Structures are given as C-alpha cells and as structure tokens.
Image (tube, rainbow, N blue to C red; front, top):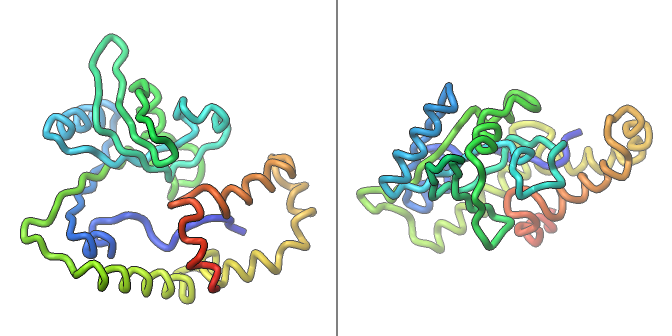
Length: 215
C-alpha cells in the first residue's frame, strides 16, 4: 500500500504550465561537475532553478537523515564559490533561505536511495514566461485545474492513487498490525509517517484538504 503520491510529475507539457503561460526546460546531468556548472551558468543569467533532490541529505532537515525521499523540490537562486562552495536554497517549509554546502547538494541531487523512479537523477527545471504571452483567463484556468484534479481522483492511472487508493487504505487498516511486524520501522514511526503524508507533508501539505473531503 502506498501512502502519499500524485498522479503525475512536473513536466514540460503539464497542465499547470499551459494554465500559467510558462515554458519549462528540463535537463539532467550525468556528473556532479556538469550539474554544478549548469547551476552557476543559469543563476548568472538570473534564471533560478527548480532542483529535484533527496531531502535526507539536506542539513536543515536534521531529523530526516535516515529518511530518503528523492522527490523533493527546492528553488536554487544563488551560490558562492569560496573554499567551501554553497548553494542558496529556498524551501516551501521555511520562510528563510538556506546556505547548503555544495557537497550536500551534490549528494542530494545524485542520490541512488529508494526506488529508481524516485531517484533525482540530477534533474533541474527552469521556467520562463511564454514569448507570446498566451494563457487562459484566471477563472477558466482555476476551473480547468479543479476538473483535472477531480478526474485524477476518480480515474487515476494506477490503483494506488485517487479514490481507489482511499478505498484500499480503508479496507487494509485491520491488516496493519501484521504488516508492521514485517517493516524495518517501528510501529510508532510508521504511524507518524502515515499521518505526515496525509496531513502535513507532500505537495502543498494539507492545502487541498477541503477539496478532497468531498470524496
């Protein structure tokens, strides 16, 4: 059973890009050196980067050293090339930015922890406004976005997402004690993780709670 997840990842042809009138460039790199040079090049052009990384390597999450999640996204908008290079990072859980050692950023971007589909692969995105300025009116964009969320809830691509997943979650609760004994995590840690995935973590945390309550 998967607790937490989303229908799709941020891509160049994502609906949100069309609704906001932005273009996305995605690149991945084979080496830390190539990723670092690209980061510097883009920031020098005043292009902040959206980086995918493993949050277990981020020093400002000291309680997550043993928790490796490679689907975390941050904004990189500055750097320093001193004796100990650093990257200036903005994260959605904090009002202040963070100076993160390049060594940690490289580990987080190149992490091989967890399933392959969740490994960051040194991916980065840059966003820019479409040259033609085209995008739908705001009210229409909001309506389309809500319609897509509802569609994803009712007809997800896999049964571990959407309404089918909620039903499976409900139907498997009685089996949890047996499942906990097979896990490397303590039952209390598993319960805390389940609560976190549902209520406070993930894309926007509980920002969509009122919408999902209807299901």
